[in-house]
Image 1 (cartoon, rainbow, N blue to C red):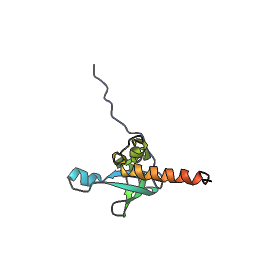
Image 2 (image 1 turned 120 degrees about the vertical axis):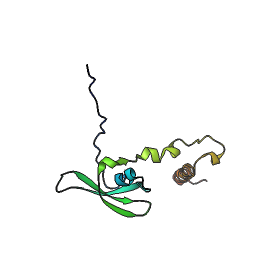
Image 3 (image 1 turned 90 degrees about the horizontal axis):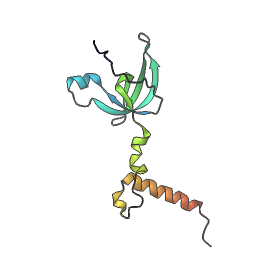
Amino acid sequence: MTQPQTQATRPTTSYTKGDFVLFRDVEKFWLGKPGHTFVGRVERSWRHADTGKVLYDLVELSGNRHRAGIDPDYMRLLPAADAMHDIDSAPLSEPDTGAMTPAAVAWLRQHLAQDATALPAPR
C-alpha cells in the first residue's frame, strides 16, 4: 500500500495598501546573489492581463525603490505584533530602564506624558 503524498500548501493571502511585507527576489535567491530579500510596503495590487494573477507593487523601504509586478507567493506579511513585541513584553517592573529596549522606553514616556496631561492640575 502506498502512502498518499501531501504537499504543503500556504493559504492565499491578500495584501492591502500600506501593509509591510518581506519579499524574496526568487531569481537572485536561487542564483546565490546578495540582496535577494527585503522589507517593503505595499503600494497597490493589480491583475495581470494574460494570467489573471493578482500582483503587487511595493516600495523597498531600505532604498525607497519601487518594485512592480511582485508575485505574492514570494511575499510574507510582517505582523504588527512582531514589530511591537519588545514594547508589549517590556519589563516595566524592572528598576533599571536600561533593561528595556529604546522603543519600549519611548512608548512608556509617551504614554506617561499623555496620562499626565489628563490629570487635573495640582491646587
